Amino acid sequence: GAGVSQTPSNKVTEKGKYVELRCDPISGHTALYWYRQSLGQGPEFLIYFQGTGAADDSGLPNDRFFAVRPEGSVSTLKIQRTERGDSAVYLCASSLGVGELFFGEGSRLTVL
Amino acid sequence: KQEVTQIPAALSVPEGENLVLNCSFTDSAIYNLQWFRQDPGKGLTSLLLIQSSQREQTSGRLNASLDKSSGRSTLYIAASQPGDSATYLCAVRGGSNYKLTFGKGTLLTVNP
Image (tube, rainbow over all chains, first blue to last red):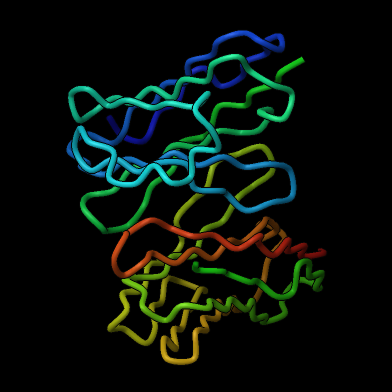
């Protein structure tokens, strides 16, 4: 595609529910990143994929968070048993190798 | 652990002024450095990418410099315009793990 696409753009859920956030990277980009951004803060690293495998998942806050990229393109970030503290904007980015990083518009998650 | 600091946190200038935004990082073993712009409620837009072997990059009214040994980068904006108002984020890509670490950003307001 022309740019990084993220869906949904907004998600409101109740505490304890399960949530999936989807990212479609730029076609041909091998690297895919997930970041989380809270109000007034810079993006916080969650996980980085090189191809299908997670090259670095050290930013995932706990085992309620999981991400997959089964075919080396689309990625899904999965959050189990959501908590109010999970509320943030979840940003996805892609790059060709270690080149310039391009971001999507983000998925705003609100946990009530 | 890489830490990125941006100074000032906020800056307000009259239209037409030239201005400098500062970024510092603690680990000089970086692969590259990228400057982004973020408008309220939006994703990040890439402005400039500087490889670790480069000293500066220019795009239009923007010029970014990199002094890797001292852990500093600056973003120079010439002849500022109200449309330049946004948050500017600096991010460094690690030399070994390739993940981007962000600063908290500088909120720029250019007054007409």
